[in-house]
Image (cartoon, rainbow, N blue to C red; front, side):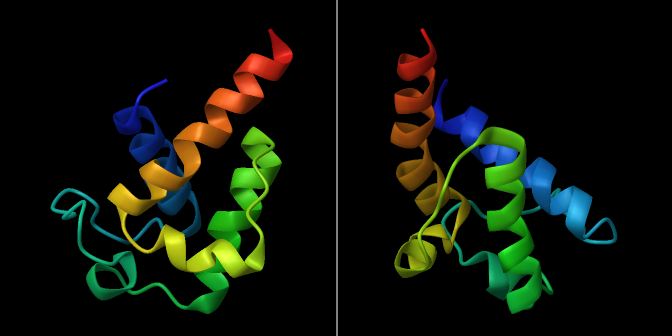
Length: 88
């Protein structure tokens, strides 16, 4: 899995919870909340879907690390890799 794969997973989840949002021009380094009309409940839905779909737990104190697509990839990639290694 690559950082680009993780970014796509996050985009796919955003598409599910906010289907009216245009994700075609997202800047990977800019805060998602500054680019999209996501409220705190939408953000919580993203975290919940990461857990439900991929078994990735994000503690509340780590939520700020999910601000942009790049920071999501940086934070989540090691967790996806650890999960893959644990199931191999």
